[in-house]
Length: 265
Image (cartoon, rainbow, N blue to C red):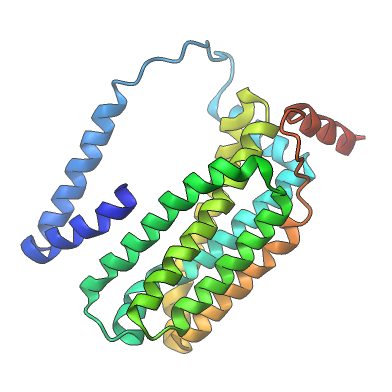
């Protein structure tokens, strides 16, 4: 819900009280979040006391490096992150230049995207077990690429909202498929370490794309930047086709462990 209400409330605070009030509101919300975390119950399982942070990070990287599927999944994360980073700072230009609207209209685009993620996540979670995961991931990336290009080509506000909604549904399916894979194919005590290895690749590539967006926008055009973003996203289909998904969720962690063992021989 924060993806839906956040942009609307944030825009209201900014337009009514200014940027300083918005920053104070953001600070207060982060402090409240940190305070709420202190009320979480303690983990019943005992953590290994003889391991260090660096050892955990090293083990996560080694686990990913020994699995071809996890390496391919990392490449998918990098492609999607870089693609998203290239266009994430350009949403304001999509509203002001392509649609000719006020910058405050960006809240509606963000709200439509949040609704798409909410609905798409629910649908994907309900039907993911019945789908061919490899095909769903590939189709999801294709649909996301088409929707991304459609956003920049659209000159009608309502059409752009619908496209943004549909692209978020595709993104939700991608997230659920990948999350299901990680939960069902990785040993429970290693999920955190693998996530801690793969997620920074996504965030880092997204930051890299965001840092390049302004330079590309100034030297070319918004169409070219979106086209580059779509191309990078489509490249993610190649490693996605090599991820070894299995329709039967029961044989999960043991299959990945056998895959890692076979790669060592």
